[in-house]
Amino acid sequence: MDEDDTEPRRLTTQEAARRLGVKPETVYAYVSRGLLTSRRDPVGRGSTFDAKEVDALVRRGRREPAAGSDALQRIRTGITLIDTDRYYYRGVDATELARHFSYEEVADWLWTGTSTPGIRFNAPAEPLAASRRAVESLPVHSGPADRLRVAVVAASTVDPLRFDLSRNTVLGTARTLVPVLVDALPEAGPAHHGDGRLARRLWSRLTARQPGEAGVRALDMALTLLIDHDLAASTLAVRVAASARAHPYAVVATGLSALEGPLHGAASGLAHRMLTEVLERGSAAAVVADHLRAGHLGPGLGHRLYPGRDPRAEALFAVLGELPGAGPVLAAAREVEAMAARSGRPRANVDLALAVLSVTTGMPAEAGETVFAVARTAGWIAHALEEYAEHPLRLRPSGQYDGPRPPRPLP
Image (cartoon, rainbow, N blue to C red; front, side, top):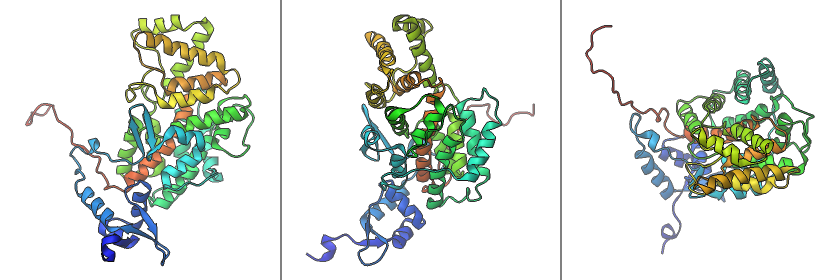
C-alpha cells in the first residue's frame, strides 16, 4: 500500500485558500468553526489541511443558496446546538463549560477555537473614556440597553480600525469591546476588581452589596450560560448586519437594538417583579392566579426550544443556593414553577433564575437585562466572525409582494 493510500494529501494554508477561493484568514476561521481541521507542518512553520476536507467544503459552498432565495432558512453555524433539553457550544455541553471555565475563557475559546486559561479582557483608556462620557450624558432614567448602546457607538468613533474586518483585528476589537461595555456603566457601589474577572467588575455596576466568591461565581456562570443560544432574534439581526459587512461595533449595536423589544432579553425584569410580589404577599398562589386571570402565564416559565427543563436555569439554580439569603427567593421561584406545573404549564426558564439572582443580591429589576446583553455580546461577535467568512449580502431574501398589481394610476 503506497503512502497516498494511508495518508490523505495535505495542503498548505495558501493552497487551501486558493482552492476555497478565500483569504488565508478565512481558512483559519473555518478551523475555529470546526469546518476544517488543521495540523502543524513538522517541517515548516505553518498549518496543513486535508485535501479531501477542503474539497468537501468547496462542494458544500457551491450549494450555498444565492441572495434572494431561502438563505435565511439555511444559516449554517458551528457555535451552538440545541438538542432536546441540553445545549452545546461547539459540541461541548455548555452547562459543563460554565461550571469549569470563566466567561472570558469560554468567549475567547468560542471566537478562536483555542483555550487560553486565565485570560482577562481589559478596556483601553481612549474608548473607555469616550463611552463613559456618552453614558454619563444620558438621563438618569435611561435603561441598561440605552447605556450599552451609546457606549458601543462612542467606542466605535475612536477606533480608526473599526472597518478592518480581518480576523485578527475583529478578535482584538472583541477582547476590548466587552470590557468597555462593563466598565462604562455607572458603579452602584464600591469597585471590586480583585482578580480582574469581568463578572467581578460587572457586579459593582449592578449592586452595592459585597459580592463574595459565591456571588461572583453565580454571576460568572450566568454570563457564560447566556453567551449564545442559536439564532435568537438578536443573533439573526446580527448575522444580517455582518452579511452586509457592518463592523463589529455596529453588529453589537444591532443586537442591542433587537433586545429593546419586550419579547427578547427583558423577561428577567418582569420575573424579578413577580418574585418580589410573591415574597411580599407570602405565597405564589395569588400572584400566579393574577397572571392567569390577565390571560397569560407568569414570566420566567417555559421556552419554545425546550420541551422540558431549560438547562441554563437548572445550572444557575444549582449555584444560586450558595448565595447568602437565597433560600426564600429560591423557594418562591420553585413555588411559582410548582403552581404552573399543576396545570401542565412549562417549567422555569433562565429568566426566572436570573430574577432569583437579582432579587437575592439587591440588584434592580433591570439587572438581568444587563447581564443578558453583556453576555450575548460575545455570542454576537462569534456569529459575526462566522458571517464575515461567508459571501457578502447572502442574507438578502426576496419579499413576497402582496400589494396591488401594476400598473396603477398616480395617486
